Image 1: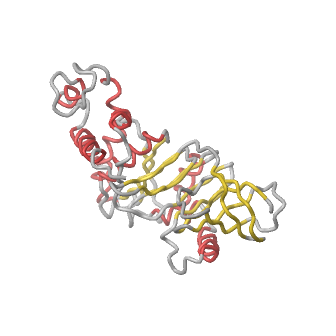
Image 2: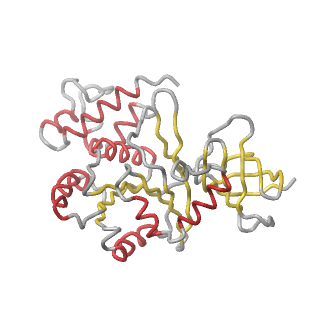
Image 3: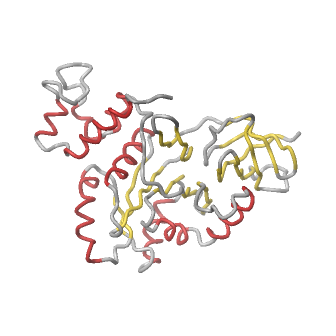
Length: 302
């Protein structure tokens, strides 16, 4: 039995597609893979050790150590998004409306996982809503998250020129709600994306459900980009109190400055974080989200 290394490029249920290491001597570069038993702890972007069971199929033996792992969770289960990422791009648009809650949670998830976060504002050609949308994004810019303005449909060349240098030598993921134009951006950045999706879909036997799986594309400049299905919620039930307070970057100057060493920054007296909220140094919206996430982390059942 041959053993080799591969990178997971797509996942659908408990079925995975791995891109075999270029140095391997297998003829099929793409391998259909399964895990042993009922394990589902494999993520797109994982580098895995495989045992070949046929020329185009294998069993995942081990997952090599991950540099980073991004995932969502509710009180019952967690959903792995991608492994070994260096960057997260949240795609929003001038229309339709986007949820601040999803942006904020995505930024917290990225900071907690040690992944650099960016925001892409798409559809800047919709001038009527542009200034209002910029205004909504200013609090994130003030926190130091870069915002990149593009119009995938109206100015495709400019969009590519803006985004391609940011992707070079990085492992990036694009996330966003449905309708933000994420698919248009992926098709601009990866001209053969549709063909690749059809190939992956056929290999994973997903039928017509081409938008329900996460997939990784390899770009030039030693870069990869992961496209994930659109989702409306980003649960962070897995983050502990300590992880949460550190994932809100604007809290950092005030941590350790509270009267009580185990301060939760909610209602405690002489809390440096609450003082910063009162004086306008921390926005109420972000502090409210912190309180909500703290409440959620206490509900975890798994």
